[in-house]
Image (cartoon, rainbow, N blue to C red; front, side, top):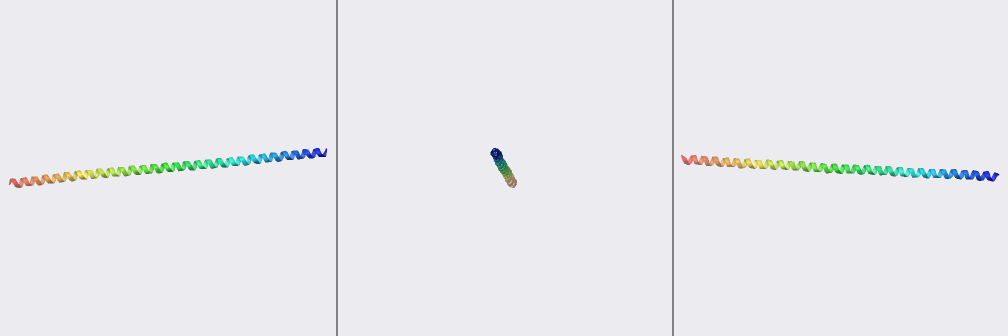
Length: 107
């Protein structure tokens, strides 16, 4: 009878140890999966932030390109108008010179 109690107590002790071992394995795997999921979420966050910064740098470069192109377009229009006014003033000066010469030769 004492041997049966001993085997019963040993079997219950073994069952409790197996239960504790399985629970520890379950918690270790759950902690591993939790850490992996948090690492994955942080990597996705960093990836989305890097994409956001790369697109913002792209848009900043495009806006700088368009602003410089508008500046060069405005400068080219300014130079074309200045050339137009310069040619008109030279034409006016030549016409005044011809008019004065014609007046001089008429007298």
